[in-house]
Image (cartoon, rainbow, N blue to C red; front, side, top):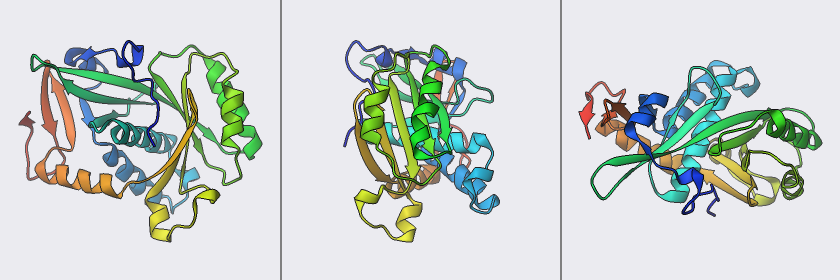
Length: 248
């Protein structure tokens, strides 16, 4: 399915940002899979217990998944950045070439909240975040569900729709699949995640990261798994020692 991220003509979320403005937010932007690989390394380091991970690593996981969802929806490259301090918890950005050849960016801020209690408490967790402050119009809220339980996401979406808030785009993510979606092998579960859109419209999909992992490997081998913006110019960046920074 295709999520609705607010992308339509005239929407503030589609406001163009020039390279200089993007550079003010961050110089380096990474392929979303790079964030997932860092997350996997952290999970391994902490014995597979996601609750023992530094909070920043769980936030990186969520921001990376948003980047992949946007990439899946738009068929465009989306890049991620994790600020040293929040808000926001993360940023996602895509670049589009205009008719004059110049690049413009489209950016989203990502806020992450975690749910660790009984399933019926998830409404309170999200509602508290919605009322916390006034958010930028381009903000996406992601709730990371850390408690395996039975959730009525359709009911949750209906209840959230009645709450006044500047947050208009809200998702729940969790590793694996819902109980109604059939069985997966242990290997498939490790590379599969579910993303539920609660606002502005309800939707749910399960994605496997393997195709995106292949895409990342191909870009890494070419030395093109990151984008760097310097002095209003765009470059490829890489951690591959075989390559150096290349002008796009």
